[in-house]
Length: 187
Image (cartoon, rainbow, N blue to C red; front, side, top):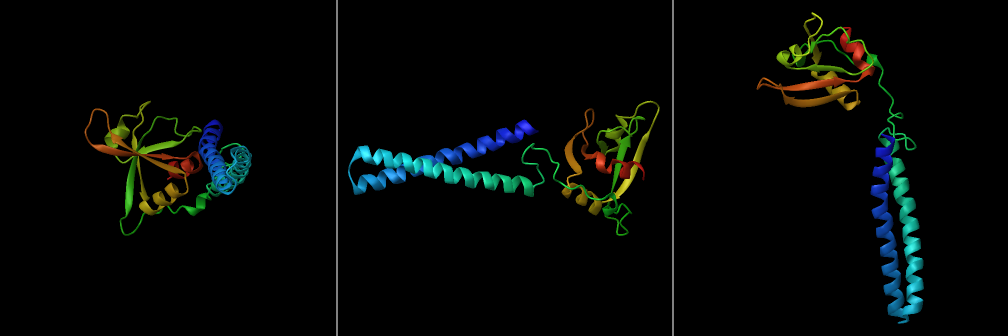
């Protein structure tokens, strides 16, 4: 994650830096040529404009990048999502919606659900059955759509859409972060 963050930062900052240098050189060169007509002096003035433009926009783009990453919960020094505060588990109301706006999710149990990784569930019981192991079974959990939306917006749930291998019915796979995994498993 750190390397990806640094690569993206460099790839996004270099064009701004180069563009500002070219713009500074061109504007000062053109202005100087119009006023003096001396190419020797104008070239020096152009290089000073390039240095000025690059430094000002380099600082500006760095500040903008820093503001972006901190606003989006990314540690600007490591690229990790360590600044994002995880919501308290009590913030999620998993009581079934009395108006029926609920989603039933299925999981093929294996006996290893309490591990450290994320929790995967699906809205397709046939797909979930493909993951049953160790004589276990498919279990289901009904969750209000509003709680799933809240989890998605808090960054503790990802959706993946596909088609079950060996079947034609599409499904959505729900990948719950380990932060909320116990909440779902203990229902």
